[in-house]
Length: 356
Ligand SMILES: NC(=O)c1ccc[n+]([C@@H]2O[C@H](COP(=O)([O-])OP(=O)(O)OC[C@H]3O[C@@H](n4cnc5c(N)ncnc54)[C@H](O)[C@@H]3O)[C@@H](O)[C@H]2O)c1
Image (tube, rainbow, N blue to C red; front, side, top):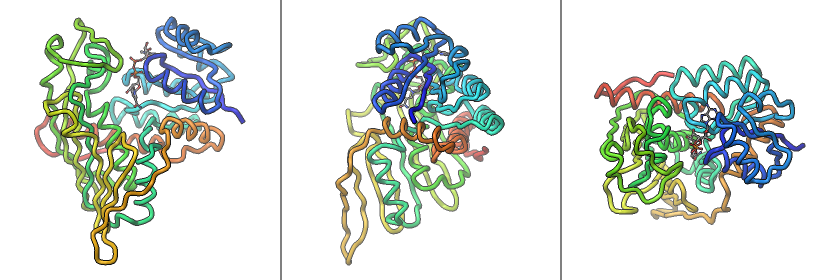
């Protein structure tokens, strides 16, 4: 059965989703955007013959559309997801799920009430390294987990400087909500999302504030808008306590002063039987363990996967089987509760309880 998809958001990520759905043989039948011209331009540029281009509500009213993908500024995730659910559509919403815990809860409630599906765009769960790490951990190769590392350092990688990404009212924050959401989700998903207890974090804003001085090379969702707003953090660091006795260290930057590639996107899972490390965007992982009285590094030959294909097929499969396999609303709420606590801790300058 083919699945018919509508995409809300004709921007950078909307195009990525569009290509992924088409590549995997699904029909994208509608594109919606607050800027209808942008939707029309995308339909034209991608030769989406016969597809509808309009406002989000036009897509929700389209009877052919079964699943809706929402790829718009974070502030609109909740209202658009709820509208889509109420219109009877299944929803794949981009990360972060929402601006905060309260919004995430409202989205879960709407999905329950309408009996529609809510999947969160945790695309790294489907990557080569994400899938392989999960397999090894579930097979018991790590044993009891005691420490997790979640890093995503960019030297000069502020997205859309001056635009919605750097406007707190639209995005909810800087790299912690933008990149932290990916690494916190993946690392905690790998170990079964242990109950999140407390967080201590600090966020900084040394690079983006003086927009004209910011030395960027490339820019996602750019170019810079020098007359725009920058009122979010551009680097963030946190320690999170998970039950029963696990520490999680999170370091994420859009900008920082370190030599290129000296600090990267290293993820780590450490247990009493073994430890796994890999780069978030990497193609291989290593397992450190003990075998026959030797310290051994295991480097499996991994089947290379396209994470976007994986996510796209998971959503289509959910629509067919009526069940989201794992990246569901509850797991989005779990991550959101950690993000909220990190920001709260930074503002209060002390460790705080994590509340979902
Ligand atoms: N999974 C990933 O790795 C990844 C990567 C980049 C972005 N994202 C997420 O995708 C989302 C969009 O980011 P982007 O980079 O595509 O941004 P973008 O600025 O390139 O595009 C956003 C689009 O949304 C439209 N829009 C704005 N407000 C709207 C509204 N109220 N209703 C309908 N359309 C509206 C804009 O006109 C624009 O076309 C964000 O939530 C971001 O966090 C995810």
